[in-house]
Amino acid sequence: SIPLSRPKRNIARDFADCCLAAEIVSHYFPKLVELHNYSAQSSMRQKMYNWDTFNVRVLRKLGAVLNKGEIEAICQCKPGAVELFLRSLQVSIARYKTERQQKNGNKSSMHNSLQENKNTVEAKVLSNEVDQELLIEKEQEIQDLRETVDILEQKVAKLEQLLRLKDAKIFQLQNSLSSRE
Image (cartoon, rainbow, N blue to C red; front, side):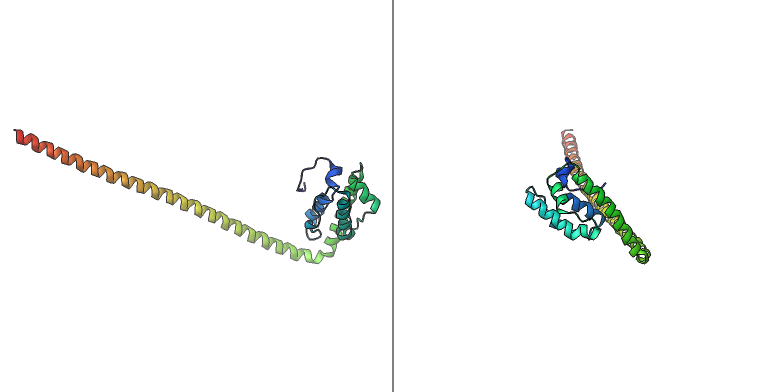
């Protein structure tokens, strides 16, 4: 499934402003679509502007150019218009992918090795992040244990003080008992 910026409720209305269509193409070809060019709109004029921009900048490259009538039908949320567009977009994306793969046939082996290197680096970074997290966790444990030791040392000191006081009291009572005899 393709992550979209807003939930799908009514497909005709959701695609009327062209934002979701741009997100779909961007999912497959991020360099082909500049998402900042397509903002959510409710006015017919702005929807048409978004679709005209998308048509010229993106659909032309995919070989899926829409005519004015098709754009107006999508903007006006006419039943079936978006579905037809999405079917043709699906075919165009598949065709464009295969064309790019054929063009980049020689580049693909180099790309695969670069991707493997990237994955290795990402794994090392993740491992380093896990190590960092583990280190932070262990440092926190050490800090907690140090605080526990400090509290226990304070308790020991207090008990030693009480023991000295008791010894002094016992000595005093023994002296007073021996002086009475």
